Length: 411
Image (cartoon, rainbow, N blue to C red; front, side, top):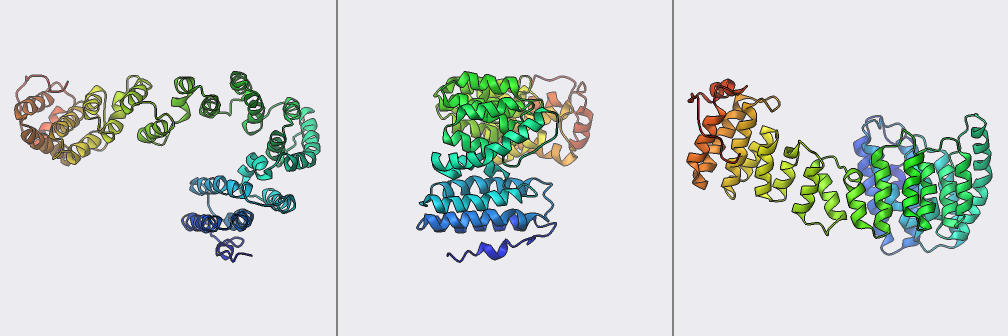
């Protein structure tokens, strides 16, 4: 048996209430250890993966997991380890022992750090025959629970997703659909198996309609969109997937992360065209995509976006500073736009320093780009008295201006 280093680090209640950071580090170390063994001994790596998943919840159950970071780390661990287990060279007897151990771990999974194993139970079974054997074990309990629920009694079975996943892997699709019809209010994690059956039969449109019609109010539109997009992509219907679902299905933590997710999934779309789709998806707020355009070095498009709708002045000033030397004309536009949005009252917790920095960069960039006259005209327009924050800007900069001036360059 391999001497796994993570074994001692994941003893029961090994981490305290504030142990999130340390636990995530230890998870990454364990995954690296299993990954290294998998390169030369996949069977031992699978045994280690099973052991790690067994020890995970008991070791973490004292941690304050409210931030969600630990949940993300454990979810990623499950996603990485399941393929190692499912692809390992192991006979049916060994694999059944692994599954028995993992089933017991799921029953003791509190908080539920490894619950996603249920969705992947068919993969863990590896063969339709083993999946069928598990389905035979799970279906009677699942049927009994559903009958109770149908009669209005609260009933829950922690093996529900395991049952559906095993039935799907075993090819017992009609039986799976029959069980779902018995459930008066199936949650998404159960309902989606019915849609997967329809998609597996080539009925992609019916599968999408199935989830759209039956998903309850607790299922987000993003969740439905991710399912629909994935099935359309599998069917080779890429244009439909993008046009109908991609923008909703790939929302990231930032506009840039959304762009990158879509660019990776749809490499056939040129960056400028993809960005155009995203800008169109937020009508009235094109400025939200300034930072994305700037990062992609689409400077003409970024300049247009900087002036099109409110942008954070601090973001614009940073862009001006970062591009002062190599792209001074763009830097000038960013700095001028920052002053413009300050003058009309946009920005959060702005100080006199912010105004000075934007003004300094506008003047300096204009000098490098040989566009000083245009920049000066734009600054004068920003400082006219008819703007909500022009008096504050004049005071912050310590300058006065005439009442009229040409419109700002770039508008």
